[in-house]
Length: 296
Image (cartoon, rainbow, N blue to C red; front, side, top):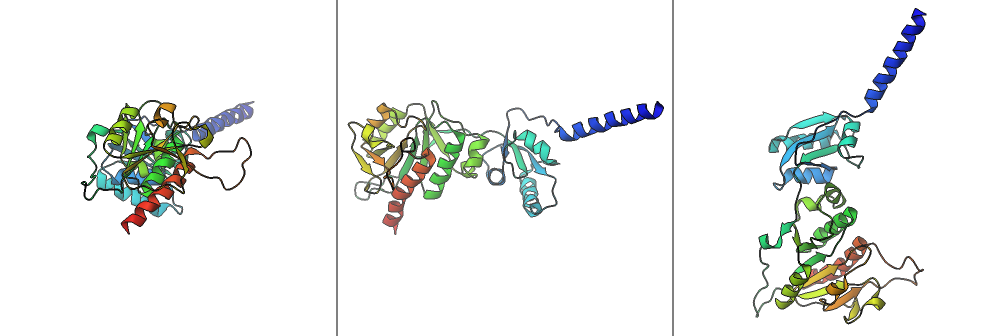
């Protein structure tokens, strides 16, 4: 009986120990912080002076990423950020199961910048106007993965400024930073409470406002052309609408022209459009490539 009791207790202890090993340790977050995750967002956040930084969490590792982790430690030491080596399950818990690549960074959130904070762009003078400016305006983009992909494309292709509508738009979250491959950490994103007044003001300053249409046949009162035919000789604003509904009618009517991407084949019903970030990448490449040719 004593042997059976001891065996039973040993079994209970073993189960309890395994349960504790499976359950991540609870790491209490600093008030007002968020958890960035992934190699690119965390490295770029450490290298920039745009966030308050609290703690760096690295996976205990002796594998192929050991050199990367050593570089993170050096970056953190240079910024005076404490480094904590933790197990994978702790990192999983910190970023709620997202793909962290062995790195999490506790930091203050990034906020949209107000247009009032922005430097006025150099539009040149009447004799030598600066025709090379391209701004991207986002109306009610709500999916963080889409917003991140949009920022990554805008940064890569040479967009000068990104402005979002404040209402019904995704904030600058760690998921957005990861989807942008860290572009959000180095690229200012502006926000406006009154998108229509902003577009009207830019038109009055001599900018061309260009909208986008996934279904050209649904657009009324605004000329629609293929993005392949679009030519520009003044500062231009490209306006992108929300994932589901596209541009609102009120915003469409403030556009001088609407751009459409011609498909490469006859399309089946139900798959007649592109993801908003993919479509924007195609449009920006078409337009920004003209910018590069002009500057050659």
